[in-house]
Length: 251
Image (cartoon, rainbow, N blue to C red; front, top):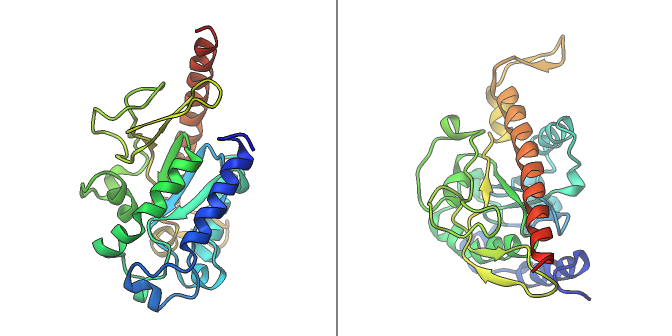
């Protein structure tokens, strides 16, 4: 199996799941039904990350399968992305009591799982879903999702994305592309575009039952704009990566 092929990544993710499916690293293990590890394409260009699973996800073992998930999938389809082409996971893999935000200790216990998923998939862009996830990914900052949603936090270099300017998601990972199997590890930053939580949209946005649509200018439409921005950014990054690969072939 060729390293970094789709098949290789899929096997690595399966092996990682087996390591975490019976996790006992924090107190959340006492109240869960399933570890919601993550799901999707092992070589996805876009990774969606939520805060943690809800009751439906805990029951089924997969992320975003309830009402919020149905809305998110509909929005993804609305920008002509396919759900099965994405990778979706959460900051923590277990249900929290009363659906509260995970504590700092719970997040720390699950961080190795999240980071290794990101390492393996190595997406071009990460979409944090909601305030908690955004702040979990950007090195301890405390930002409001209302002011930051839809903004592009871009990594500094399209070739290596090596950390320097602290304006991206400060997650260590692997730098691509390289020739053949000669991959190497550097600390890098991923491009990030945060969006509102679908549950927030369902709770706060105005939905017209007559027209079967959300109110213009509300969180739903802001989120759709953010997803469109993500699609355009990925296309730009893919073009830049292809140009870098062509340059490397000449070396």
